[in-house]
Image (cartoon, rainbow, N blue to C red; front, side):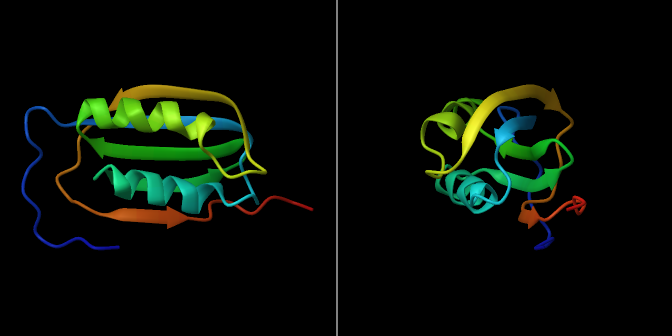
Length: 107
């Protein structure tokens, strides 16, 4: 995780918490989210959770909206997004990207 001194977010910056449900674990979804967010110059993180994948991204609101639309439309071939719930959340001053595994699921 890169946490160098980063400039404060601009007034047009927003942060979104996105909960994605469907077939999104074990299908390359987290790397896809990382590449998508990076291509849109968004900061944040993605991790598996007990019910799917949780994402937080920060940046231009139009780019976040574009990312949210593309999550289902352009995902990995074996992924299936049933639902993506988006809500605004508090801004962070640091700029980074992190992909985490999240809790282990029992087999």
